Length: 59
Length: 133
Image (cartoon, rainbow over all chains, first blue to last red; front, side):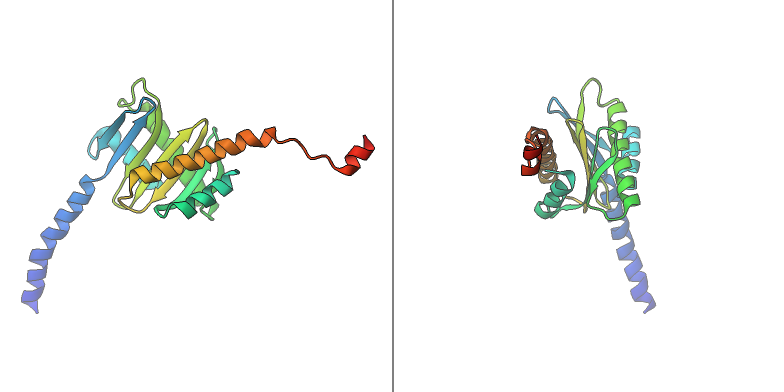
């Protein structure tokens, strides 16, 4: 039983961590303008953080 | 079409939209799909704040921000503004953004058309009023 738990932690832990990191990287803001252009602000950019925080408030 | 009817249509048409509010030019909630008034206000305020933050962003520059999407793990927030009115909507994670924007714009167009048609409608005169005149 202990071995099984250890195996689950060893295999599942990194998978869970990597999937969360991948999901976090997908967090972004898209701004669309009247001239038809669009800007994407990725998570980590200072301007994106403010928009992402406001988005979280909305959800 | 009035704002409540436009939102009812939106929820019926778009399976991706979880909640939506329509705001007037001052940012007040005109209609909402959320029964909880406090939650509606919070969604409206967040939508207005998102537009303000987008307007102030260096990325915007001289351009005019018309719509935005914030994609998060928990879901996405969409804000579209046209002719003074704003619609704010939330969806589940990874929505089809193009379709959501299309549905939100359709709702705003329906609202704008309703607003244009409403004052043009002549008042019905009743027989009583005619007789009195």
